[in-house]
Length: 156
Image (cartoon, rainbow, N blue to C red; front, side, top):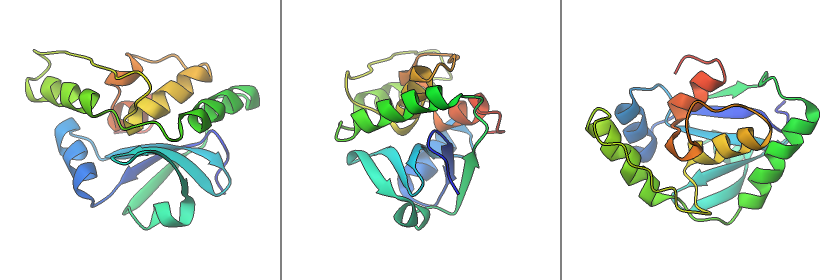
């Protein structure tokens, strides 16, 4: 059973997830935040959505639930609150382009465009964890699913 504030890391077969996995040299291509026993908030190409876990599970080969984030109940509530507030926000395509350029240039070109109010999947989870009090290694807009996995103590 998932608990609000848990992080899901996903390995799947959809095109966008495979591209993320390849570009970041990561096992994970997507991440989301559990907001209720049977719901996650995730950023997809259609924007930030509230998704039923049953539907979510059909889109991926493997989901790793990170339950021990070290957050207190109050911190989990703050993370969940930020995720709920983001529902309906657009996908951050500009940030995808910037992260992609940085990865393709082996870090020689480092841009960030963080479109205010828009999110990638990892940017959403990073912002939520930051709202809950988690120290981030870099700006939320620069985080990838691999970074989220490492932040949660899971090999990416």
